[in-house]
Length: 320
Picture 1 (cartoon, helix red, strand yellow):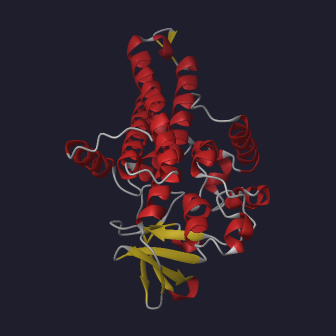
Picture 2 (cartoon, helix red, strand yellow):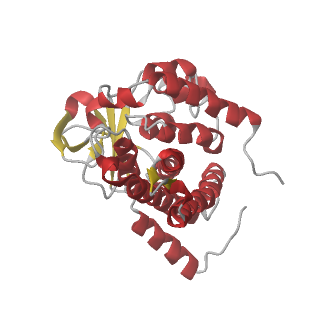
Picture 3 (cartoon, rainbow, N blue to C red):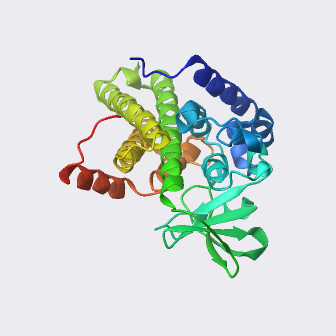
């Protein structure tokens, strides 16, 4: 059996990568809140998961994983997962969601603040096992200090909201897997940038990439990323197929992707030295994104606990 991505899925990712390289360069992270969003909307990116009757393509989450990785690789600002993944699932009849004209933010359970809530036309709040839909004019936002300058967080208050039917779990699963895919993209970019730097930075008359200590750290990152990426793919297949072990698979993917990205950030900072977190170096944006996304939709520790509970409880099923 071939578990690789199809040519169409990889071609979609390549197209998204080209758009982001052209319209979301590192310089845009310093001056724009939503660079490349109009271009991605024109491409149909925000309608990939929306049903065809709402002008979407009706793809599965596994189909768009490589494209979501590219948004992480580019450190794309804005509520990408919330608008491109959560909104099409919870608001399938809203054609504005598929066109990219509607920007959505999410306040997940267990999180005090909502990222990018200032950009949102609608806010989705997970409460009492379900979802509350809050219009922009009903929301009161208070900015709070966050680790990611391109992903500001806000304390949310509101008086009026609309209850959406159904459980919060399916949408949260999709958001978690999509965030894990972004983390893989962040980790891949951090690794690529760090390898390139290690090849040109010299010390004691040799490139630091020739030192065994540096090689071993970079190899550890590469192994962590390559082990985490298939777990994310498996989790997407589990979510698309509503497999009974979906919760365990989602948590395994998020924990592995979060650990890989945080390891990539730590090694990148160590290899670059003190310059790595300075204002002048673009690397700091990817460092912050790795740290912020690793705690989004559940921390690594929380997801590892869920996997541990599932395994010790006898949930040893394999796909399918």
